[in-house]
Image 1 (cartoon, helix red, strand yellow):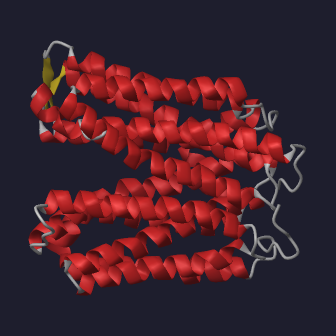
Image 2 (cartoon, rainbow, N blue to C red):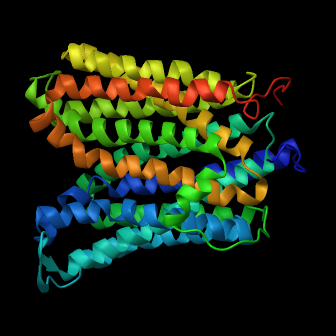
Length: 430
């Protein structure tokens, strides 16, 4: 593992701020485009299923690219792959503009998807580019931050990185919604692409090359189990990442608007969609703020795992409140509990991965960790709607969510607290 750093405090700060700028502007660019993407079925005259494919294409691409991207980073260093990822992400919004002006030619009918149009294919390809780029960006950012920091200050900078990533998306949502209403879809996409290009330019000017030269064959999605088998502690951390991503980005985001609608929740003139947007905005802001604060705190404690205990308890309490008290006041309180728990768990878990992983394996192990989170993000929306509509209902579904996140206490927190490799006794903050 990377216990010593040859970088001064000022160098770490400069490098970390460049990385944070990259993930922040990437998050803003994602958010700018997102308010317009759900409207594409009307704009391009495509089926709802095709629209779902467009919206999920980036996540699918990232799921398969995470581990190969990690291998590349371990072999050539983080600088070039991260810059490649930032500029590849920048292609996507410009691809959206091309898709808007592509002739609406029908390419045929595909089973389950229905009619497939040429503009739809352009958007799918653009989203795939975004997914590929985001894999390199996240893993490059993680490897760079981990390599230049030490166990004394890693939590702080990992927290800042994840906080920048978390806060970039809601910022982009606001900017994108305003641009689409005031100007046009094209203007929103153009700004998204410009911000992504700016992130790539900043990274090109500032980022150093770190930890190049690892040997070994390339890793793919099939190699994730064997990678994790070599480091059992990372398996536990990965399970925690899977659980919180599955519950937060999968179940909660997917069901919140329906929950507000079905229980008739009202707030001033806001309907279900407006309430869900406001509530999730509050949750994301809480999560991002807590991520920044918790990262620094994790450098002050003897074992970062200690922070996961209140984090999982907070998320569990939030789901139980939603399950048993379907009021707008309770929902607002619950989303603060959920956001705080998510924000506290994310930087602690990621910093633990960095503490446990040798420098020449950061890319591959970070990729394996990210795969587990992406599986949760992909699986959550698939089961969320059937769970609340057909299988269990809202109360039982959210109780099961609470049970899943609380299971992390016994599967993640307790075993890691007993693992001497994770303990940082005697470490003091930078």
